[in-house]
Image (tube, rainbow, N blue to C red):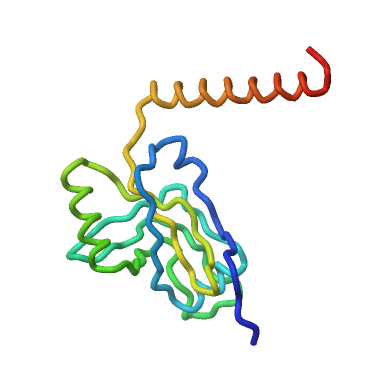
Length: 158
């Protein structure tokens, strides 16, 4: 069997960048069952409502939907079960400190295979208010318009 190399993205949480301002990003392994891995290899997962919590010194990924494996039998997994995340002890301690002191949240940004192993990219994030979202949208629109103007200038148009 050929070993997988590189990074194969399964799912991304695009809405998270809109709703949260990301302060720091961590990569964590996930403890999965066999049918969950097979379902992920089919490219199926939804991170939209997912979040992570720290309970008794362990990090848990909650509310992430990995659909049941279509070819599975009675050993199939529960789609929205809590999954343990694999992080180093010092990373967990740092996360606990930041979450408790400043009211930050852990949000899954993407789910992918890295060299054949399932990983999740966790963001330490702070929720955005409505005016923050409007500012981001306005800034993105201005940048897009600047790029269009530069493109027109290069082509000799106004």
